[in-house]
Length: 125
Picture 1 (tube, helix red, strand yellow):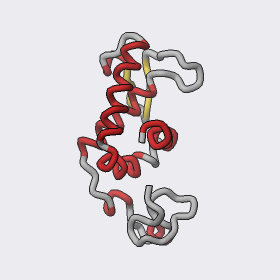
Picture 2: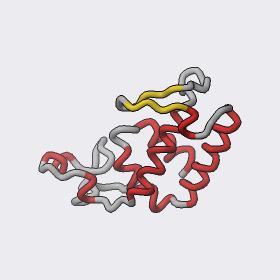
Picture 3: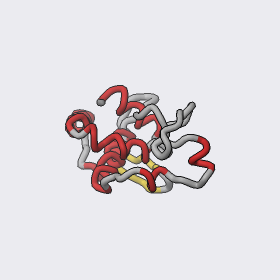
């Protein structure tokens, strides 16, 4: 994360990308950041894969619904918890190796996936 607004550099306060003034002026993060769609999609897929395992009980769930879309473990080629862990480890290794390219995409994903983005920043990066 940067210390200031991505558009003007002013302090963010409790915001993550744009200061209050820039956001009030109608500026959106997507217009300020140049994010590779492939990286964005790969991170979002990682967040979906992570959602297959319940953060409350730790069990693998067969179906997860996010924004009205239903995903199954089979959509990710996952049949066991060991397979899920292997896929997560691979994704986290990729994220770690591409941290500079990942950070702008995390800023875009932060609105919809705040807990997941925070987990990536604290555990992976």
